Image (cartoon, rainbow, N blue to C red; front, side, top):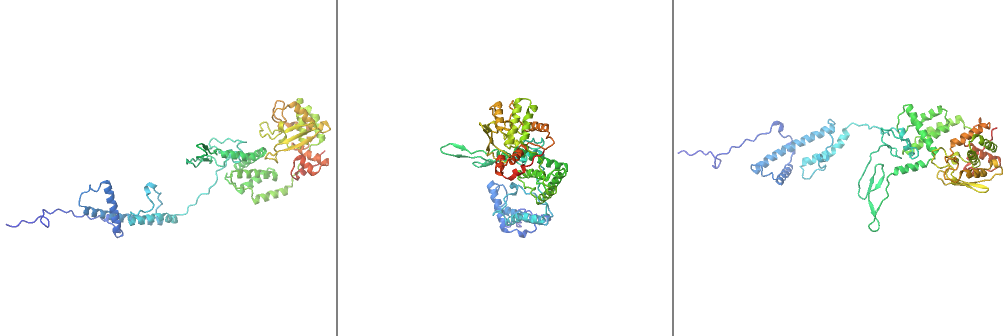
Length: 531
């Protein structure tokens, strides 16, 4: 009997198993650069994969002998690592050549850790190092980009008062389409920044640094730190009070004129203002007939406006100073044509008050005001209210006058040369001539006025005597005296005091004391009287 043909395995343990032929990789999937992948990298990647499967219970779900699975997986990982390394090397080369636009940086979650991990394969660590150096290579290869010049936004008229720190005295309504301007700040509509910090400072919407924490004193009491909210408004008020009311008004008017000038000639509204625009503004005012001194006053207003916004002062330019000096030499020093009041004119006014005033009270009011202005050498702002709405209270109050038997004391609380309100008291003596005696005129007036608080020179209904009312009636009286063709003004009383004192033989120091002058400026007030 023929022996049975062995159809089993090599040792006759059953039929031979069919072994599937190993499928080769397609040509497009064959690994290029497999020699670059080391055994250490594959072992490290395999170990991490096996650890991942053990932790999630995935290792028992895969059938087949462990060595076969490991060999198959190892081959897959080897090809995968090779392809990744080739791909990343190609992308890096393209980036460096500038042929591929820079891709947006991924988020922190997508990007992962920037530093290569120790557990990563060597190729991955090398690639991480290359990625970290890639930005410098991209910067070197990228073309230069010209950044636009940063310019301040166009300044609109509604922000003038705020930038001049004049909001408390001269509020300006903002345009409906614009964000409200922060008082005392150049910037308009800044976004609010809030920070919540325990026991630390926080920033409010106006930039104020506020204390968010508290401190404990003795015992268990908690003392809150003083709030700094609204600090910008407080500093703006301080800057506003640093200027005289008349200066604030003239500064706002000058700045508005400059903005209108730029709009009229279609000049760009950039800040800081270039030299060319300031020079053109000066020429514009000169051709309008303004004197160089008046142009300098407008430039002073603009300089204050620039500095109040924290900008440099473009008016302090060598060229501006020089051509203004040249214009002044060409024009010459203008002569002050204002005429001084004299004792003879004061007597004539006394005779005309009854014809111009409607009541006895008004006659006594104007006579006392005129004699006080003349003998006290007062400025009109120190004498009467500038307007019906004047709230500066720089004019004389009833509390500033103390009438004695043969003299009276006057307290000037603040003036043009005393912005800090240190005050100065002087005395006027009684005069033997009744029509020119300020003490007798004041005694008669205060008896009619009473001791009610408020402005000293006020009407019978309590309303203040204003600058316009006082000078309008005085100018009519001068015209009736035949002096209307001469140039008189409210400063003629102060000029007349210096002129009369010089004619009576007073020395320079005595004249300076009468008008409270601190320098030799009084000499410009002493002049001859025109007939």
